[in-house]
Length: 202
Length: 202
View 1 (cartoon, rainbow over the protein chains, first blue to last red):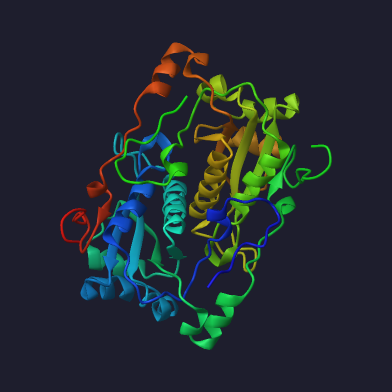
View 2 (tube, each protein chain N blue to C red; view 1 turned 180 degrees about the vertical axis):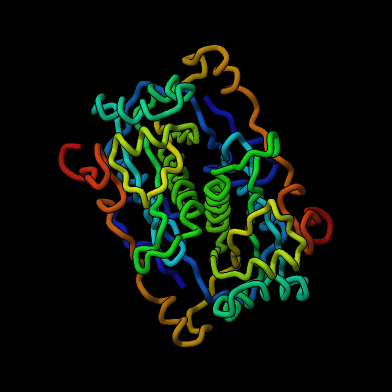
């Protein structure tokens, strides 16, 4: 299915057509395409080029590995994410390698890497659905994740399928129009809360 | 100038050609293009669709506003960012609007929005250079930024210019090859630190 952004501006197609599906088709992701997703993440910018992002990946080609990652998701996510061909766990190193000081930008920079990964995925016809609802303690124990690594989120990756693959309550959410706040609530000039003018003589 | 990622994989051109210039051409950014950058940011995904990102923008068309934002950057950034036609301050609301609870994903989600903004910028021939080196106390006072808003980073946006616009030490950094860690240090399977196989039968 499709669920494009409701925008009249000439937004890049890759960004306009992206959405976060819960319904995934029963179709594996080619390993070469998976390489490309991580290559996209790898080339994101980061503070002092620290590249704080670290990923754990599990595909349905290895059902046991996939089940382990899926078991670390919130139950409400397991319901649909268990059908996604690829699951990712997204983490960051909390300190700079060169001096051990805290990296305040680590989570922001993981977001940049995930933005790159998602753009590359969309270009390949794939979809990404990120999840904050995960059991961090369980995942840390399952994978032996060190204490100086922060477990931020997970993601399901695959080919979006028709919404009617889902239980009806989730299918309704899948078909609902995508909504966002207007730019005037997000972009200011001069003073906090003063909207940038976005029409007329700017 | 160009300084593409050194990758043999067929990475999306938008991601391969992106870099973070310090040299900006003396050319303004069209207001319609600026709309598109914020539109791209706006359509990023976020935890519970909270859209925690808030931006303050200043362009050289308003020299006083541009000087105010530039003055909040670290001196080492002011040196080159003062020439960029557009400066952004990137912030997040730290709590969820619906219940006031802390939003642990806010900074990550700002990164997603900045990833979108940067992809859209690249598509328009623009470049983005993000900066962690900023004076947050000064910026909070200058703009009256509320305490429940975290000031994360700044960004310079414009058309990349030739490196020889820069002082020689910065020009050298601008021309240096872009480097990243190998995927094997970033992407694991099964256990923390165990690289995902990226060749052979995967």
